[in-house]
Image (tube, rainbow, N blue to C red; front, side):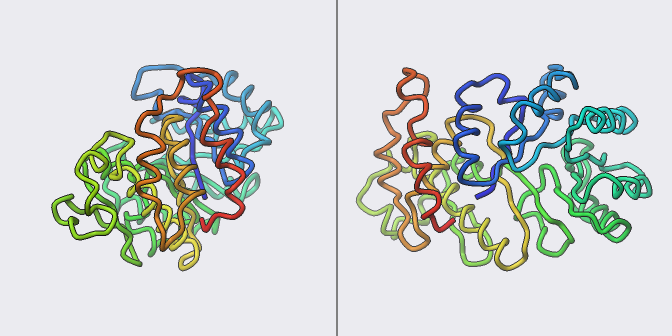
Length: 299
């Protein structure tokens, strides 16, 4: 399983940080600098602060993305060089509208780069996909597309990895996600009354907030899709996680479900009355309890 977590959220949540460390022993965890989240909220993440975090904890994670500056390719390049000078090995970020010729020099320091996503400049996803093709033809570097999900046409472009939070959207809209063998489709609840997991359980488990089966279906179907695109297209999809609540639930789904035996009602009954932060004793429940099962998981 692949997870991307933003430093912008980790710095605010001890629970999320502890979960990230615990779960990194069982799956791939990529740390994003949080530049985009901070940009949207008006917060400031300094290079000194972020680099200090990477020096102390970077070794525990699959990788960490450099602190870029939204809309400023010059300062982004300066930050990358300063991080290298401090002995760090961050994944550099190429601004999505930057001259692709400038990426050639990155081959001297890395074999893996990030391309900022379409949301930053309001660009179309097709424009971003074409940019990815251009950069790959010029450099041959592995590329991670920030904010580009697995259903955004990534199968046909030379992309190594991507991330999105799209797996929670159906649950937020009280829909059910189902993997059909090739992609994930969302369905209205009324269209699924004949499904085994829905029959006889009433509407509460289907619509009980992020404890609902709607949320579970998003986690479960995108885990299936994550494995599908890895096995068939050699591409790596990362779940973009914003809080410890969703990370704990994802850990549960990953460790207790099989492709042909999703534990829908087990998920609902496990989490319906649970509240994170009630006590220190419960803070690591989920990750510690189910984390050891990752090695036996299908995902």
